[in-house]
Amino acid sequence: MQKLTRSLLPPVHHVTNGSISSLSRQTPPQFPPRSSLKSLCLDGQLNKALLEMALLGTEVTFHDYDSLITECVTRRALREGQRVHGHMIKTQYLPPVYLATRILIMYVKCDVLEDARRVLEGMPERSIVSWTAMISGYSQKGCCNEALELFVWMLGTGLLPNEFTFATILTSCAGARGIDHGRQVHSLAIKTNFESHIFVGSSLLDMYAKANNIHEARKVFDMLPERDVVSCTAIISGYAQLGLDEEALELFRKLYKEGMQCNYVTFTSLLTALSGLAALDYGKQVHGLIFRHQLPFYVVLQNSLIDMYCKCGSLTYSRRIFDKMPARSVISWNAMIVGYGKHGLGNEVVRLFKSMCDEVKPDGVTFMAVLSGCSHGGLVDEGLDIFDHMVQEQGVKPEIGHYGCVVDLLGRAGRIEKALDFIKSMPSEPTAAMWGSLLGACRVHVNVPVGEFVAQKLLSVEPENAGNYVILSNIYAAAGRWKDVVSVRKLMMDKIVMKEPGRSCINLDKVIHTFHSGERFHPQKEEINANIKELYVKIKEAGYVPDLSCVLHDVDDEQKERTLLEHSEKLAITFGLMGTPKGATIRITKNLRICVDCHNFAKFVSKVYGREISLRDSNRFHLFVAGACSCQDYW
Image 1 (cartoon, rainbow, N blue to C red):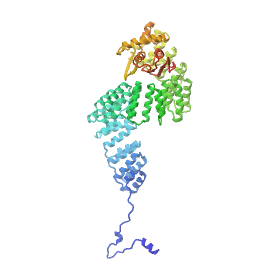
Image 2: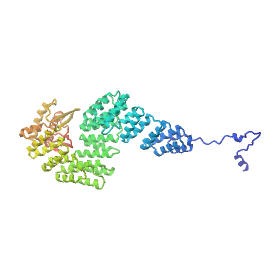
Image 3: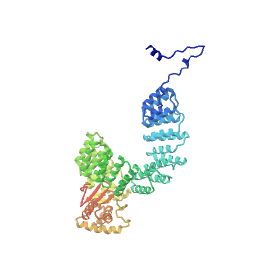
């Protein structure tokens, strides 16, 4: 035992002849080598790396800090990043521009812009990456003014922006004065030869498109020496968002033939345009393209498909996509509910809403869609109950749109006075759209006193809106008050108010044909006129009686009948009968609300010719089958 113990003790050496003994020359004890901070970070052991950093103190190197900050940026780990930053301060380590910028980026990624700004302001020198990172942080958070101020400050230091700085600052050129700032940035991009850079060009055309200046956006797009999926998608989206659906479709077809690459955002933008055109055939082709491109079916893309099929009158396809979705967002439910509502299927709206409440929490848009669906479906009591449920049980504060839906709900049902009382009891001022909804109800139910009262309100609020004058004229015409009709028309002329011309569109053989009232320019107009006269005789024999009250002129009945035959939807229906095979559905879109006479006309055509007619007007869908309409004459 004694021998063993002695063997564990270090040997004793002595100093002889003034020389240093072997004790002082002995190799110090060897500890295990410290783990590399970079390897720890790569292994995902951030906490262990931070502990190692604390033990090392001032021995932490540039590369160690770089690895730690990079891992914090990747994880968006704010507290850990603050520990690294704090360690630099405690050890009086002065980070070079690169590391200071990485710290700034870490704070931006973690949405702590105040600390990021302090880092920027404390840097003795800054790179273009530093400025761009901070500007990007402000832009992403919607702090446009701060981003622009910082951009001006950067220019004042004499540092010129690069392509990333330009692309970033252009996203902040929004709002009332955004286009002015954007043009100034555009000028600077031209001076510094960055205008044609793909990043800058895409941001420029996106900025102009969002400012409703699609012509400037197209100029930028056409000048780009090369185009990627972002720039192509941005210009297509710009057209679609402005309602220039035909232009969006034509541009897509042109670019696709030229080999444009598409992603899910491209198809989402295109589907928006096809929804506006109600181009079902094109929509089906795009759906097939998505399959062929093997794109992942993101929720936003599936929602766009649901919306497109609903607006093209094909609820079957919409519901099929909806039912097969592995995960549905609130927007998915809302799109399907809106689709049913536009088709007048109020009971389906209510059923789907109840199912939705079991899966996700409805939002304000949901309740607006449900109330609108009840309005179009004639479910007055159900709609009022849902409004009460929204306020009292769901705790959703009604917005002006919800109040407007209730007014529309009551007005369509003929409860004009109750709708007027509801408006007067509202906590906020009624909008022009709300008064317009009530005025439309007065026209349908020929309520002249309330109609006159509402019209006076509207004419004082928006005297330039021709629709209000037309509806008031309709009310007077239905009551036989022709002198008042003339007075209203004279008032329109005095105020130089022009009524939007009615137009109806039909897609045949991938060509969109547009008809205006009294069409004179269609290449087949003579043939159409001959066919519509023959059709007119047949449906009159079946019991069709023209509703002459839809003509706002005090002329003889024969002239009124001729005027009614020139309505755009009648011309489109006749052309559809001429150009589609027997038994095919005729699909038409109209920019205005369908008139009573055209509604009756379509019902009799569907009965006499045995054809289904799908007509989407500005308010809803009408599906005419065997002499009846899906709206049940309630619209």
